[in-house]
Image (tube, rainbow, N blue to C red; front, side, top):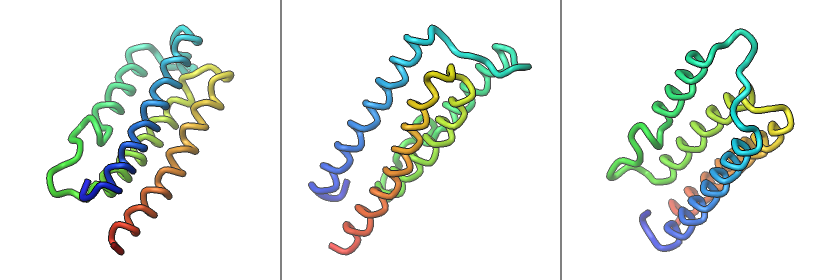
Amino acid sequence: APDGRSRDFFAFMAGEERRHEKVFAGMLERAGGLDLPVGSDDREYLAYLQTSLDSHMFFAAGPQPGQDPYQTAMSFEKDSIVYFMGMLDLVPASERPLVQRCIDEAKAHMVLIRKKQQEAAAS
């Protein structure tokens, strides 16, 4: 991050992502596994999940030197929304509100990132 205020912001965002990780870990523990959509087999859906993870911006490349950290964060949130939307089909109905909450939070993060990006550009 280019300055201390930006580093503080990204530390906050990292905490948000750790919280999402805990939500999904708890969900998997409660569910005991994944519910596959009707007509899907284990291999097909596991391949989808692996492809989704492999192509997620964070895991595929991560931030590149000289890249705008706010744009990197925005891409991360967009990829996360796509991944979470795919998860809606895999988790039991009782867990879907938690996944939806993560989607809603990622959308709110995008707005917050844009605001911080504009503030950084103005200073």
